[in-house]
Amino acid sequence: MKKEKVVFSKPYDAALLTYSILKRLGSGKVNSFKQRLRSQKIQYLAQLFGISPYYPFSLYIRGPYSSPLAHDLFKIKEKKIESKVSRFVPKELEENFIRLERFIRGKSNDQLELIATLHWFVKIAKLSTDEAVKRVVRLKNPPKAEMKKAVIAFNSIKQL
Amino acid sequence: MKVKLKEIKIKKARNIIPDKELVSHIIKTKEPIFEIEKSRLPKKTKNRLLELEIALRRCERVGVFTKK
Image (spheres, each protein chain N blue to C red):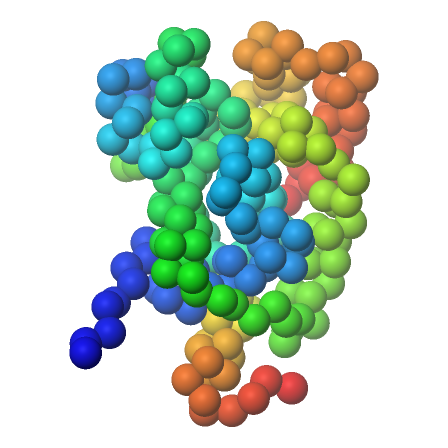
């Protein structure tokens, strides 16, 4: 019987690597809305840290969202594709992975959403940080302390 | 470089967002959604190290060699 070809929005091994990185960071699942949101935000950050293949992101109500990434993660789930979780061979990538792992450690979905949205407004929409903060506050109305934490975290990755 | 944002009609959200829950939420709240106009997106630069990692993983997957 002919084996059915899985069509990803990226080359097979790039999609697999993306999934593998998300898995290594305790994400990549798409069963619930929370899991999907976390996968999206971690992938957005993984791209910033230069350790994951490029997926195009657009800004939606819950922050940057990539339809092609959602498509690929759903395909991986649907076809029950397993991906080996392993370290990067290039030292630089492994070091960046560890930096990202530290960055997302202990951060809630809401925090990741605020940070990614701030980043998108500043780096993609080219707003100033102040304008971006105002816009995020208007859109999401987060508690002040949460917003403050998000701005500090964003400033630490602003240069990426 | 200035990036131009294009507002997406809420009715069309279903065509571009595969996440049904997210689409229902967008329709319910009528929040505006935007996409960047592709023609004005900066070109992404290639990440050689990432390409190397992908190639190595492919070799391992198809059995050319085992990583490490």
